[in-house]
Amino acid sequence: MKIQNSIYLISACLLLQSQVSIQDNPEPKELHEIKGNEAKAVEAYFHTGNGSIDGSLCLGLDCVAAESFGFDTQRFKENNLRVHFDDTSTSASFPANDWRILINDSSNGGGKYFAVEDVTAGRIPFKIEAGARANALYVDSQGDVGIGTSTPVTDLEIKTGNTPTVRLQQDATSGFTAQTWDMAGNEANFFIRDVTGGSTLPFRIRPGAPTSAVDIKSGSVEIKSASVLDIHSPFDMELNHKVFALNDATEVIKALKPISYSYKNEYISELGLPTGNQYGFSADEVEKLFPSLLMKQTIGDSKKEFQFLNYQSLIPVMVKAIQEQQSIIENQQSEIKLLKENASQYARLESRLLELERNQKGSIQTFARK
Image (cartoon, rainbow, N blue to C red):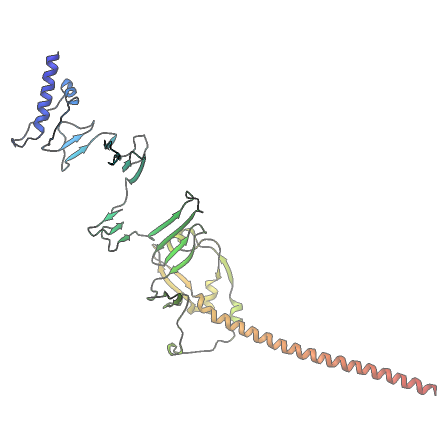
């Protein structure tokens, strides 16, 4: 039996040796399936020194003798795929961290992924889940990084079909208050969202804003605009074609109906709209009074047409209404003052009449005694 086992071991070694460093005999090799004791002998085989395999290699419990490699040079094939890199350095001056490539979880219902594990530290710093989109992370020959694109034209380019976003999230692990910000852009605007503060949008830039719309230099802020929707509009008499005075602004303002509303959830993220209660005017009422203040624009993935109200242009009308009301107040104050003066004169006249009546009665009584 020992002789037979030795023969199997020698046969296995010869078989492996026939696959190692065979450069002298380029003739095709016959495939030989190793079974039984012969397989056990191969399992125990240990080869020292350098070696080469002329052909492809399959490792794993599910490899077969007639494996079809296609273009694969090396294949790992079984239901628990792991590749371990064990650095055996023992000197303190040499790195000895161990690493492992993980393919999917081993448990039933586990995750599907490709991951790199820092074995020594016991954590996974890099993971790609199955089903990730094409070009989820792409680095081109110039070192530019693309997220969702294979043709980045800047140091970092993020490409997606709806509102590409960068989230800056500070958790409480370092003892600071948690705070989350989003920086995003779409066809409606570029904005910064205060996620923690109720998803408000404290900063927005709309498409078409001019160069240096907001220009900070030497401690001062300069604001430019090419749209009536922006903070400031250019105004100069040289720019104006026709100038008309505003009249009856008070009556117009009285006709406006202030309302409270909130945006639909499906449009908040798509258009970068704020959450919570908002305040404004009924679009129908504004259209009746100021049709030119309503602007229509097709935005969003749905390509729907939405109306936008130019609130800034309402400011002059409101100022005019305040001026008219102030004029009315001043006129009423003048009338009140005049009425008070008249009332004071009437009071003096009444006092004199009473005095005259008393004097007249006194004179009559004196005459009667005589």
